Image (cartoon, rainbow, N blue to C red; front, side):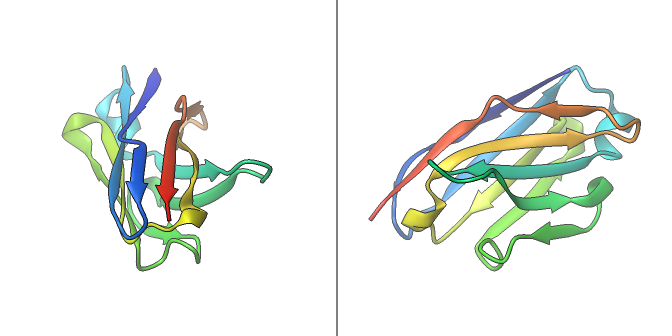
Length: 118
């Protein structure tokens, strides 16, 4: 299984980006039952959890993401997403996707850079 991320880039403050994380090689039952997360790490800071889909169901968000970010998934594409709106400079970071499968296997994406210019 590999998690392949895409969608990062440079955007102006107030703009939007959508990150994607495709789970290559993961069967449907494992994908749909996973807890799916987006984390980020800014320069000089610890990695932090931004958003999560708990076992493919309830969505949780960090306070900094509430009202601006939306996590979602597409089982048929084995892909989950992070829609980020109204971005600001504090959102600049490398974003990582993470799967925790029902069998407690952990998978991480390679990271994608998001840079917000003010």
